[in-house]
Image (cartoon, rainbow, N blue to C red; front, side):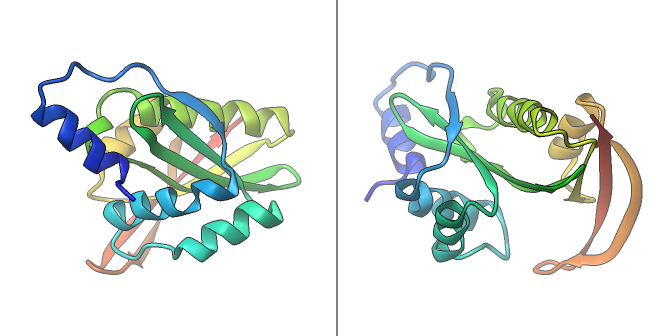
Length: 166
């Protein structure tokens, strides 16, 4: 099965125009393989497709999909909450759609859904070197509250701990 990145690359080679805005929706079990493919390209220690299938089927997480009508799944976000606290676990966008507002749209929907579920504070970790993501989170009102030393592997790196009150 061709991934969104494969379809984007073929389209760019053909000289097609930029993609249309994406639809943000809840993940379905059939999205698990595409989400895992994006995860594998975005993160050095990716989750297995079965992890996504399990989270979706058991409802243990709120997984949002960014879907382009032409290219399919081009991004996703994983968030969960217990009572008034939530955590944004993962947010990733395929390379060809980065810088086009897809991550912003996903994050905005995460924030709306969390607030609608009475989440009062949302936490996340981000690599200290991931300035693009860090800037996005700051633009939505997140603030750094700490650092987790050597949180990431491959390569080993600290994580900034961010929180936003909702």
